[in-house]
Figure 1 (tube, rainbow, N blue to C red):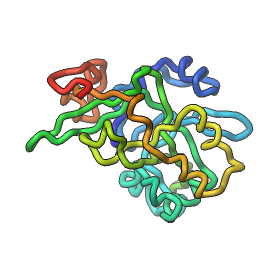
Figure 2 (cartoon, helix red, strand yellow):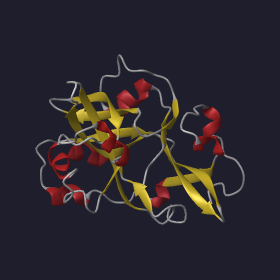
Figure 3 (cartoon, rainbow, N blue to C red):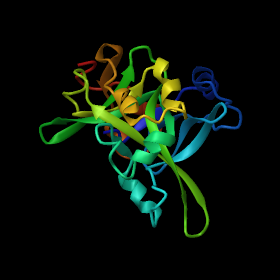
Figure 4 (cartoon, one colour):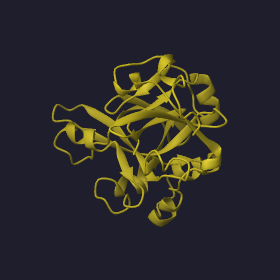
Length: 226
């Protein structure tokens, strides 16, 4: 699964890499992005557009927003069949931008937080789905979920699942509104190559979602790039 990640890259760097207009977006580093918070996404209409969405997908038919708290991830293996996700898979796909994410490795009765990054250090895009929901009060809320897949060989000792990181060459395909073939779309929901990734242990400060700061991404303890 993916329940916490970071986005500390400069907004102009992100705008160049993911081809959107970065003006007007908050440039504050976020070391500990958590569910229900606002996250930076990229969609494609006539051109790529960046947008802040609530993390935790709220289906259009939901009675209240709380269902989104349980829908922060969508399993790639079943996303085409699940009523909550199948329409979004065909028509409402997005990139969720990040530059690292966290998983917790069991160590006896304890759990050690691990930060997972690309060896290049570059930002990357999770495969995301989005929905638009209208509250009983008339407020329109755009929300998203991150698609997950089986962990690659590198990450399997930490967790059995990992978020789908889209290779750069597949980002346009994922965002292309003319692509509606569920089989073709689910074919790209594969584990990212393990040789392109690294991980290391970080401070338990990351365990608390309200903590945010550079101390959260500093390598600590044993198991560095284990």
